[in-house]
Amino acid sequence: MCSGDRLVADFVAGTDARPGLPEELQEHLTTTVDGLWVVWAHKLAQPMGDLFVPLTGGPGYPADARAQCRRRGVRGGHDAPDPRCTCGFHALSSRFLPGLPVGRGFKALTVALSGRVLAFEWAGGGVLWRAERQTVVCIERPARYERTVCEGRPSAASSAIVGTNTR
Image (cartoon, rainbow, N blue to C red):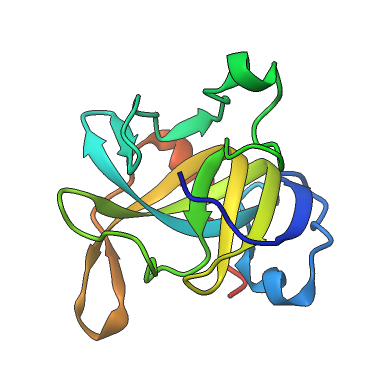
């Protein structure tokens, strides 16, 4: 699993109140069509039917999912994400996915993060996010001239997420 450097922010997204974030993180916020504030982020996963298998392997997750700590027995029960653990859905602020092994059957995903969200400095540049909830908004394929083209929406749940991106 990825672990970030210094914790930059710990906040709740997915409500109608804009999260109070440091200025450098504001550009990653967007609103859903329902007016809820979420974090717009990027990651790699391998599509397998209706699920997405993470880079670390393990069980796949659906397009709209809530994270659970897989180490519950070791640290005791806690909600994901926890700053003292590596649990939660991991995603990066950059769609170029610095430091990640692009290819090998993995697709770039654009995701909306909500619930408790942690932001960490990322050695590859930008921010490493760890979130309680994640909705896959777009399965991307590379396009010329640094544009992104969606192959389609993975579920009806993601169509409610798309709003006006503030970036």
